[in-house]
Length: 134
Ligand SMILES: [Zn+2]
Ligand SMILES: [Zn+2]
Figure: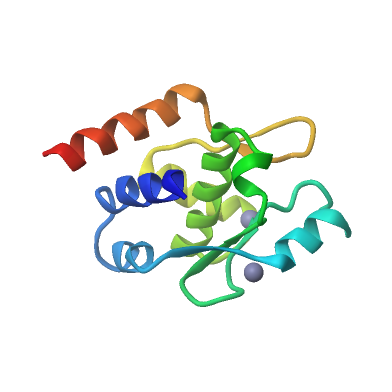
């Protein structure tokens, strides 16, 4: 999934030390447990990804690519990276992303789902393009 690798590349350029080590090894994989959480339970409709299931892995809903627009995909992925950077509750994950990567994660009204602004996403993609060229 290209967006994940773009965000990972972009984040790695901005992290140091233990933070960098944690993100460097991160993989993405489709996970049926996420799909089940998405279809049932208290987080229905909101569950698109989780961490702490497989080591060094962000699990995503098998339909992540097609089920969400890029701004939501980026918001969810960055939030999960936040969990990797700073173990703790939901708020702490977003604080880690804001403090260490300078991106503010927002929440939509419908599902309380994470997203980032279109301009923030454009900034990430532009920076990655420049960095991979150099
Ligand atoms: Zn999983
Ligand atoms: Zn979370």
